[in-house]
Length: 438
Image 1: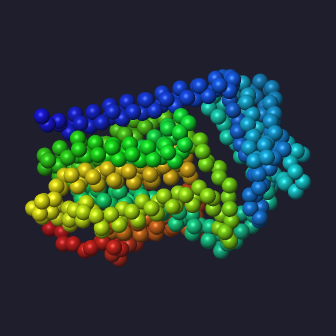
Image 2: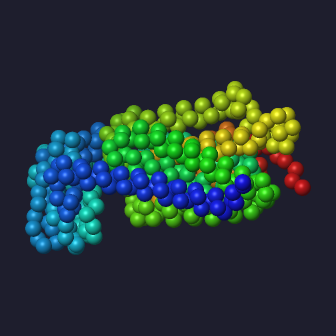
């Protein structure tokens, strides 16, 4: 008995609701247990932060700094920063403003609040979620850096961002190459990876193990999407344009499901959110950045080698070139496409996991990066694996470098300018092949 595509979509959404509710319930249970074990009052608000002195020599944690929080009723609560610079103050929950003040007299000799830095900081309390505040300490060397001095760091940031985005773009390119579908719901798989990683991490699972489990679940979700939804639609002979419009509908469904469970809040992982910075010449990096780059490189190189050296990879390239001809040679086209959907979802989820470190976790995380991924695969060449990687690196680098001359709020527009420029000169993309249409 064949299931109708609409019914399959309903079943997928119900399954996603069930998985999400289970993860959220588990996270809530563990969070409550942790509060009980520590003896904390759940009707309190925790104000946290970290004192770090930044100057020409790098970043140094500041211990012994006194932070005072004044509640809405006027009561004061204080704490002193630990040797690693972190501090935490718990105040009774009261709806209204909180005033968080750093006692500058408690800072070590030579450490001062940066000129123009806010002190005290006022935050409005509307719930019992933790509040994070940042006091900017140091001489403010960034204000004195010349345009040329910022180029190395911006270049590093651009290559880093481009490499992470290449994971999502690579999956999007593989799906397009084998199905000719421009999948607008691909960004929601990026969000899926970040949200599931967060849900598992808050239950106490190590962040990297949580990410591995999230990638595996995303692979299963990608398999289910194609096997029970997209394959029946293809079997009915639905056109590519109609399928693209359907993917837009799936995108909005999934995004609203995510928003339902997260409440539209922005969350952060429980580990490696504020790593210690290291300097290599004019570039500042962290060990977390190195690990993220290593993961992205392993996946990108692994997928490209698999496409060249394995039987499944050669079958995938054959389907991408001509699905009908590949079927006549004995290749199971549907099985290849379903595998590509699984791999593409896994890559997208890993992209979301890594983006969650630098951009936090939110229900529309992937949607905000979808335009960048589309620009990357178009610039590199639609359907080209190496084109997706090259396009991502170029787009990511241009986005970060553009902040040297334009406001950071407009940096995403740089990707569109690059896209327009490449299409005017080479419509098939940098590594794409020119083809006759019609």
